[in-house]
Structure formats: structure tokens, C-alpha cells
Image 1 (tube, helix red, strand yellow):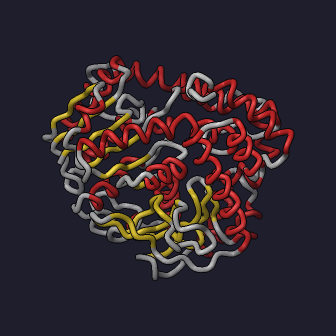
Image 2 (cartoon, helix red, strand yellow):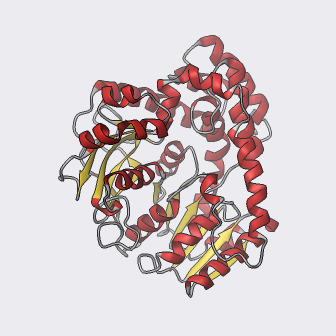
Length: 433
């Protein structure tokens, strides 16, 4: 089995390598290709990957290349984890929206739109080249904004699934609080990428006992503190929102906070410099503890389980070596709605539990949603429609319309000011601008 990682020079990559090495019984990789134009970083991470595999006794061959076409040739699955513009572009996404009194964040609001505009054309080009190299290859997208990028891939007819680590992170946290194995918990996880709620926490599978009321009663304060939301919010919802919902439920508070401290992009850039120095140590043969602060926790386990299910090796469930995010081959992914949420168009991309096999994901049924959730999901889906249109066709007016439609913006003057700033800061990545 050959896997390729586009963006293999990312400082995230050792997390992924660690999962491949530990969980080789779940996903028997024979060849792993790391692809990245940043030759120096790629060399460091490729060497570390070989040492991690060697330490774990993994026999796979690890190669590196800056040649995308050569790297994806014959790959069974291609994982995308790229960042167009690097941390410098992210720094812009997190700062210039604050000038208009709006959230500065790389996946939500105006910053998220900027990232989508930069990213979608690049990802579609990569996907076309993957299809030429091997039309049967699966594309697994971890590149943000995952929902919009996955929708672009699926609209273009690619064999693609979007992946996010929010669900598996919450599953692991809930399991620890409840004293259970992660594989014993199934989350009723519903929404869009970075706009989700856990409406149930079930023991043993989709039809199991719902442990969420007890979890909130006994551990609600701890969960709320980690989400940085008032405990009363969780009690009144009777659900656990993802931490990205804080941008909606406490928007003005977050804007004030962001305006008074260094951006996350600046923190990550400093952390990456430190990580790369660690990776250069020829004695290092495991992922360093610092990597946990970089983000992407449990990404490797989720990626292994999803890849294994798509490639016919089985994944997840109580018998899995990874203890994936759900029983059997049921996992949280980003995929076509196709009636799962009846108030959305079929070609919307939703983030829900789905049954995975080599033919692709099939979402599980979702009970009728409270308008409290359905209304916001519908609103953000409308924004994503317009965002994808702007990413595919360009044009100032399309950017403005997407920003005006976003529930965190929605004011004419703000949308105008954000449009001007977005185009000014991203002109090097948007030929039409």
C-alpha cells in the first residue's frame, strides 16, 4: 500500500508518522511519500520519519520529493495538509479582520474566507494531478477550511473525504472523564466543519445508552472550562458545542481578547522554529512533547482509521488497534449531505458520523435538529455556497457577497471594509485580484 502526504514538510507530519508507525496492523503501509516544495524542511522531517519508523520496527520505505506528479504516482490514498501562504498568510487572516471589529481566525469569518480563496484553486489542481496519476486513489483532506475545500473536491468529481480532529479529540476527552475506553464511545456529532455539536455521547455504538446528561452533570464545569464557555451555556443547550462555537456564542468577548494578545499565528511560527530545531537532532526518533501544543491532536489516529476503512483494511471500533472515533467502520467525516440534514441542499458538505468502506462514506441518520442548531447551520451553509463561488470564479463582488452573508459579519460597511483588506493582503495569491 502506498500513501502520499502533500504538505509532508509540515511540522504536523511527525504526528501522522507516529500514528502510521504505531498502528501498522490497522493500516499496513508499504511505501510513504512525503511531498513538499520546501526542500530543507522536507529533508529534516523525512529523516525523522525514517527514525520513527525504525524505532517502531516498521518496514515501510519513506521517500521525499518536491515533485508532486512523481510523488502521487501509484498512490492508493493522498492526504492533503497544506497551507497556501504559510504562517505569514495566517498571521494576516488573524489580524486584519480585527481592524473591522470582527474575529481574526484562520477558518472562521473573513480570515477563513481568505484561506478558502487561496486554497481551493491549489487543491483542485493537486487533485486533478492525483486523478491523472491514479483515478482510483482516495483524497483525504485535512486542509482548512475543510468543509469548503471538500465541497470543491466533490463538486469536481474527485474521490474525496474531509477529515477534522475535533470529534476524536472530544471523544478522547469524554472517555477520560467517564473512565471508559475511547472505542466504547459513539458521539452524536452533527453540523458543519468547525460548527458542530455533540448531541449525545453513547456507550457502545449509535443505539447505545446516552451518557451525555450524566457527563454534563458530573463534569460539565470541566468541559465548559476547556471550551472557554460558561457552564450555563452547556446546561441550557443540553449539548457540547465544539470550541469553534465560542466565536459565535461569545464573538465580542473573543474580539476583545484577540486585540490584546499576540496572534496564534505568531505563537505557532515560534513553535515551528523550535520544532524544526528538535527535528534536526539525529538522535530524535519519536515525536517530541512540544508537538502536542502545535495542534492536530489525534489527527494520526483519525487519519489511520479513515485510510484503512477507505482502502478496505477495516478501521475503528472496539477491536481496532487505534480505538478510532466510533464502533466498526463508523467515523466522523466531512461528506456530501445527500438528505442527511433535510434543510440543506444535497451537495452541501456536512460533518457527521458516517459508515465508511471502499465505496466511500454513507452518513448515518440524524434526528430532526432543534432550530437553534439548524438555523445557524443553514446560515453558514449559505455563506459557504458563496465562498466557494468566490474561490472558483473570483471577483470582488463575490467576495463581498460571501462576507455580507456570514453570520459573524452581516453588515454592509463591515463587509466592504473586510473585502478591501482581504484583497489587499492576498493579492499575491489571487491572480484575478
